[in-house]
Image (cartoon, rainbow, N blue to C red; front, side, top):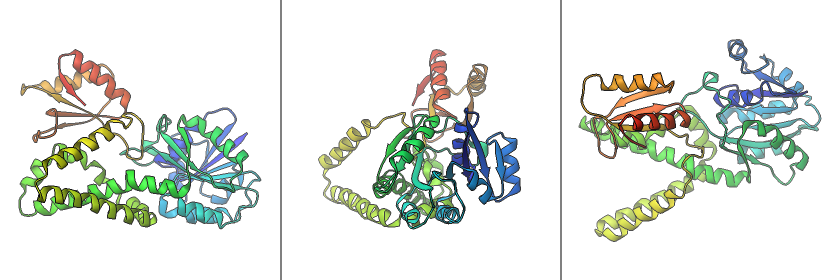
Amino acid sequence: MTTVAIFGVGLIGGSIALCFKGKPGITVIGHSNRPSQVDKYLQRGVVDYATTSMQEAAEQADFIFVCVPVGNIEEYIQKLSAFRLKPGCIITDAGSTKASVVACAKSLDFGQASFIGGHPMAGSERTGVEAASSHLYENAYYVLTPDEDTSEEALERLVELLSHTKANIVKVDAKEHDEIAGAISHLPHIIAVSLVNQIRGYNENNGLYESLAAGGFRDITRIASGDPILWRDILINNRQVVLKLLRDWSHETDKFVRMLESADGDAIAGAFETAGDFRSKMPERRKGMIHSAFDCYVDIPDHPGIIGKITSELGNSLINLSNIHIIESREDVPGVLRLSFRSQEYLDKAVILLTANGYDVHL
């Protein structure tokens, strides 16, 4: 029997737990400092057993997943080093920054246990164990950051266990991971927040900024609504990488300043063309660090009952609609009605159904 302990059974840890729970030969233990959370884990059937004792969970485990917020990971693995862990126990984490965590682990003595950094690159707009899903990591990238001291046997065991997530396992150096994550996730979040705050400042003197920004602007800045405390910890932890990226970003914006100052139309068009070419090569349905929005836009006539008709058609086909938004500002938005779904599967079914019923649907 293999015992897996999960510290931090929220969206990430809970989804990992659900990937293992019920599999032959695997028992999943959940830990929280709060008894109410322990009760919730059990009531929702996310784990087989739950406890408020960190030592109890850790010392029974063959695998330990530390899925607490980034700012608490090092504290947790330091506490783990004080316990009598099973020989061969593998400790891993799920943080979105890796270099500092791996460095911390290397400075500790886990006895005959070992540490391998990890980062499942998937997420959701929802949070907490209530949002956990056994499908969250399916076809997503799951990054592991072994180093020169990592046992090949331990790495193979962890990879074998993670096969239950149906994720694509990628092995990357911890420092390289942080550089890439900074560029494709941390920097875009900063840009989105800065852009929203810039427009917020303009809106203080003219409320039309808020009204007219409801379409495409809201879509491209969706990630500005991230958890403030989570992003505070991530950015401070990865600040040296992010500072370099911000300087590089400033260089890119300076290029546009010079293009516009000189009215260089060819250079502006070239910048858009180059960006478009690179973006078109990116996989559209691969899960990444910035979670996908499963939205489509529908052009509809201004007829009484038309929205109710659409929602009824979706409901009758058992297609789970999570949100609906009537868009007044149509610039850069290919439809007046935005429909949001929980998954790509529901989105695909909705597009087929609505198109078959004569609606003009755009992605």
